[in-house]
Length: 393
Image 1 (cartoon, one colour):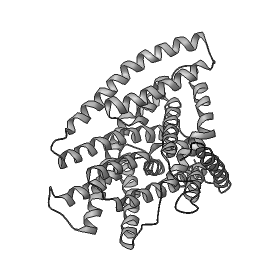
Image 2 (cartoon, helix red, strand yellow):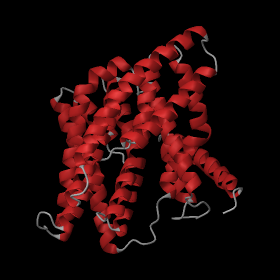
Image 3 (cartoon, helix red, strand yellow):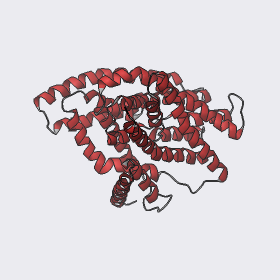
Image 4 (cartoon, one colour):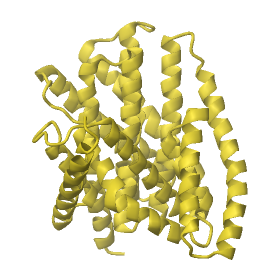
């Protein structure tokens, strides 16, 4: 493909994403909903004017990394530490309930297979896919409503990050059970080592940035150096520890969230995200969707898979939130905020394809779950917050 063709694709994506984003806001829905629908319309499923390419995949990856970096920058560190233990409990429920429900759903459709059989592992793997939470769409929605820094927003963000780490550990264990040559315990060790590394590097980086910020306040070198830290942490997380790059980006944001110019860095990052990388990322979710190969049986399974995927997160996370003392409406907000699936679910599904735990025909179910959860979660969150604010004190 000629290199100049990407300019046409980017122009179409930006115009369509912004048009449908504005349309979504006019309809009282979050802007990201419009951007996802834009990707679906211009993608292979409807008009087919833009197709997924390696370049767009990489642009979308930068988009989600920048989004997570901004989320880290806007995090209230004191609130994060306060909600940490509760978020961990919520994340554990957000992994366990979908894992069990996904496995039971597969067995309900295709029968109970004996322990250790190929079909048994495939059933368990459908549950593993459901454990993933895509925090990026929820983050963008909460940012848009100005609710990211509150207790609920911080709890959702913390729980989603921990949720994905636990989900990746579960994925490694399931693959390890199927393949005795793999070493599931290594992922646990690598995860612990990464956070030890992040604490040490974070302390040093924080001290350096604090000194530079005091000497050269509100200068462009601060956001540039911050972006470099974000990209380096993302690279190191994936390359040397096997942790998702978005976790590295979020940690980089956390490192810098307490310096004086953290808001200034976030402001500069938002320009890049709003203008280019954000629309490409959210539109890419729609671009990945192809509904041409759906059969009746797979369609029914996909609908059940979506329903179980959404409800299992709401029930699992919501019940634990209630046990931790949250109000009913706040439990619904947390459960709903944890419903979204995105890049991590795709990574898990693609890993399943590569090791034979997922057949290609079920990839449609995963894509459908990502689309439905990505579209409905922002709408439901906005409705819950609006209802809560309208309720009498």
